[in-house]
Length: 174
Image (cartoon, rainbow, N blue to C red; front, side, top):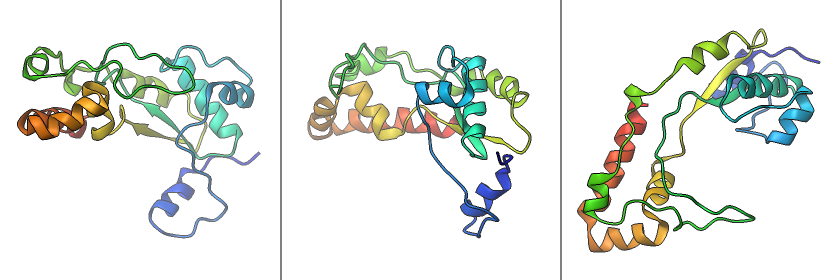
């Protein structure tokens, strides 16, 4: 089994040739993490989860593992999940009043201790690639609903712009 060497992925990202084949996946899945690491991942986002994911990525030959660094996000309503999801269900912003009532999380107030706790569980040579809670468009769709957001762009472009600004500015600070 090869040892992790993040410098290989860094070379790829710098458009240089790595010394060996270099793998990249943004994420795998829970059953695969368990199979590769030989342990139950535990609750998503916990230190146990991060440890299992790091071990699974290392066992599969990756030089890094990915994780969400904090509890930061854009909470929405419940969304029924089966084989597919509705891009309208769970929307919480429908108009200016619901926008003003929405309890925006601030990245500066979030708990980033997972980063420090996780650094001690990394196999030698491995690093963490941190990801955020989706992108600007995905979060705006989740907050407003796909159809509602499309209508909002036409009917109330100022509100749509405010939603995008509220999400985007927080993601940049995150």
